[in-house]
Length: 477
Image 1 (cartoon, rainbow, N blue to C red):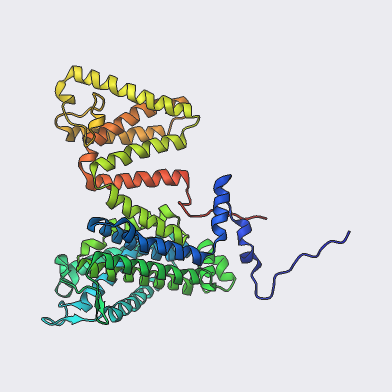
Image 2 (tube, one colour; image 1 turned 180 degrees about the vertical axis):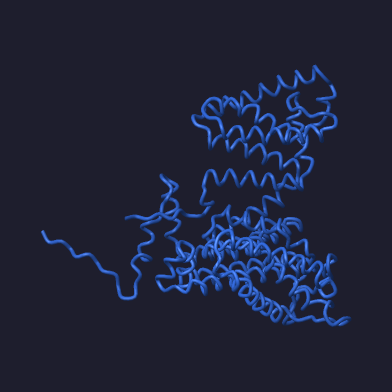
C-alpha cells in the first residue's frame, strides 16, 4: 500500500506557527465546542460586532450621567489594560511604572491645552495636534525608560520601573510645581476640540474612547500577527533562545515599552480632557493595581481578555461596589460561588451552609444572654441578615477589627488542614467573615471595595488561573 508523502511547509512558511491551533487546549464538553465555533468567526467580524454593541449601548439602554461616567472609566481602564498587555502579556516585561505613561499623557495634554504655559493666554492646541505629539513624546519616554533596563528581567526590571512610576508622582508634586501645579494639579483644561468641533458631553467622550479602543485593538492585532508579535512572544518564553534564533531581544523589548507607553499616553490625554483637570494622585500606585487586576482577570497575553478584564474591574468597582447594599450581595454571592466551585461532593456545601446558619443563631443567643449591648447594633446595610444571627455590638468598630484579624487567622488555618477538619472549620470561618462584614467592612466602602475586588480575583484565579479569556500554552510532541 502506497504511503502518501508528508506535506512539507511552503517556502517562507513557519510550520510551528501555522500549526499553533493544534497545540491549543480547549475546555471539555460543550464549553470547548462553543469556543471552537466562536473562533471560526473571523477576528475582524468579531471586532466589528463588539464595536457595534458598544455603539448601541447608550442609544438602547439610555444611560444616565452616572452610568455614562462609569462607562467612560471602564473604557479608559480597558485601553490601559490593552497597552499593558503589550509589555507584560506579550513581551513578558514586568513593568510597574506603566501608570506614569498614563500620567505623562494627561499632563502633556494639560500643558498644551490650558493657560498653564505662557500665561495669561496659554497654549490651546487642537486635539489632532496635541494628542499625536504627546503620544510620540511618550514613545520616546518609553524608550528612555527601557534603554537602561533592557538587559533586566523579572524582579530587577520590576524594581527599576516601580522607581520610575514613583519618581513621576514625586516630580509632578515637588520638582516642577510652578509649571505642573504641584499637589493642586492643573485645572480648567480645554475639552477635545479641533476642526470646528468640540466635545463637551459624556456621550461624546464615551464614543471617542470607544473609537480609540477599537482602533488600538485593530493596530495591535496587526502587530500581534506580524513578525514583531512572534518576536515578543519568543522573548517572553525564553530570551536566551530567542537571541540564539537571531531575534534582536533588546530592540524587541524597547519596541514593547514604546508602544505600551503610546497607548497609555493616548488614554491619559482623553482622561485629562474629559475631567478638565489633572492631579498627581490620579496616577499613583493604587490605579496601577487596578490596571494589573484587569489584565490578570481577563488573561495576560489576550487582547480581548485585557479589554474584558478592564471593563469588568471598572464596572464592578464603580458600578456595583459603591453601594453597601449591592456590595453585600456581591460579598455573599462570591462566598456562595466559591463554595459551589471548590467543595465536592456538594453535600458538603449543604453541611457548611446549614452549619453556619445554626452556628450563627446559637452564637447570637449565647452572646445576647451574656450582654444585651453586644448584639444591639445594626447589621450593616442588610436588614434581612439582622434576624438574631450576626453579632454586631452597639459600637461595632473595635469588634469588627477583631473579627477581621480573627478571619485572617482562620483563613490561614484553613490552608493547613484537610478533609473533614477543613469542612468543620469553614463553619466558624464563614460566620466570622459575616460578622466582620456587617460590623466593620460594610461601613468603610473605600477599603471594602478593594478587598472585594481582591476576593473576586482570587476566586477567578482559583477557577481559571489563565484568566477569563487567557489560554494555556501546551506543546504536542
